[in-house]
Figure 1 (cartoon, rainbow, N blue to C red):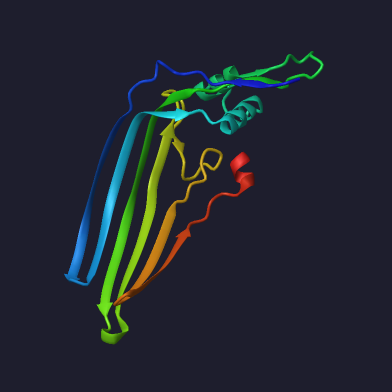
Figure 2 (cartoon, helix red, strand yellow):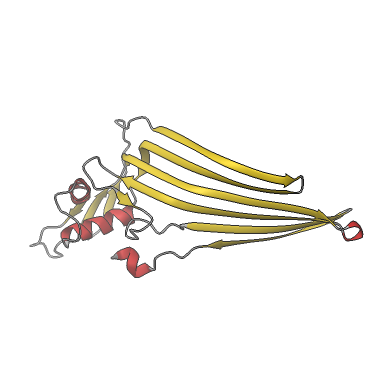
Length: 199
């Protein structure tokens, strides 16, 4: 038995609206040294997102197994989009059709702090050096697919997201006449493993 999917357009999509604000501080006691920290907060309403086939299948499974409320808008949507063969067919309950299309996500909010440190120094014959350290901490990331759905904490619910909470980077640059070099590194925080993501 074959399976086919449909991906129609969505002419009833609403316009995306977004609000963002932030603030920061800078301390620079010398021309060669500065530290700054910025707070940001972004809120998006009616964000357009393509339904992810893998996530849709996981949601449908969780709804059928009782891991998600089968009466929730997310479950009603997932169960309606996946067509299965009848329980009495030669291959019972097999996926036959999947309907995916872009939808408006009810809302999404993200906030965090981004900090930077830069320091430069000259060594005469050895050239000039420049050090930069950056660190981003995501404080909050929430999403709600439908207005009646619960608000999801995407930083602590691996079934829906495995994003990095913290990202740090460092670079060391050197310049001496026609010669220059740069060393760069980045470190990402831990993310949930595969078992946590599917359960």
